[in-house]
Length: 491
Image (cartoon, rainbow, N blue to C red; front, side, top):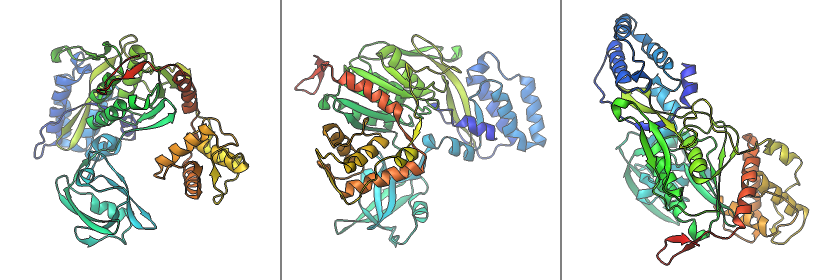
């Protein structure tokens, strides 16, 4: 079973289908249902179906040995391809939690000096719709005081069955507020963005778990022209994939020209190959750099490959995982059949199954933040650093901004570039943006670096390589003009 779960992390959802659940099937009946679905829908099974004699023989064996169901099905599936598998509900939740989510209201709570405080509200969640805000102090759930509970106890109360009701009481600016809502399936937010440098936007996509991700990406992308963005760093590292329709929706926003994005190779008896085209009209940027690594897989590889072959993007990082096959995820009486149903093919290079995508610029993150900080200047938490200051304390601030990915070249001067990095850090951690590193900022820097060092994080040299490329592109003239109606046209 360990082998299955290791594969599970590399497999991603391309199409989500639900088989009607039945009351109680025997192991032999479940096996026969699964075998029929494999033969009817599996991509490999179109040419190499499970023989009827094998189905009958294995079903008879399962009548006497029902515990062997998972092993038998996984032996059959592994002989077809490396991504298909049969999983229990627990295994599926463990391996695909980014896609399956959890039932709750969509808030993250931490304990601060003020008590249990809302630190994040997930977009598209019941909490967001109800009006709960970051900074609200959590007081009660369903009328019961929770101020003395631990975070694990609180999480158990916040979560529950989908559709069940919950009333959350919070304190906001001295006022007590009640919010009543129903729990829903909560998927993590996978898309985020920040300005990396003047004219350069950094966008991270950690997964494609639902079409909500495409909506979040669209909001970010449609606002780039207001910032006069010239170049974008698109971070797809450690993105194991997800819904290809979400990836295609994002690609359609990015591509300037009407062009073939990819071909989805499917079974002939289910429609055969499907060509996907972009509609054109994407924002004319000077440069898109895509960050990739060995954990960039499936729909993320699709996005990276399409942007390079149809959009002239530059891939920076290391070789990608090599998964171009997509799967149905089928619920079978509570267990899950993950079945390969198609193969994605890029317009020029075709399938990348088992090969991956080679980067245009190879780059590695080799320095740990822990080792870097050992030789960095000491940071005095009580000595503010003002804009234009040249000092050892300014160097300490700049080095920590560098370690956290905000400043490419640390120096001993809090100059214009360093101040921009400082203000981006202040904004990201929820501080007021100022023209100095005040004591609150210094403490936040120290905390962020300590946390990153303890978790073994690396100084992101891959990101800095991409930032250099994008900075050079951002120095070139803007290729578009924004019209009065909000649309853009070529400059």
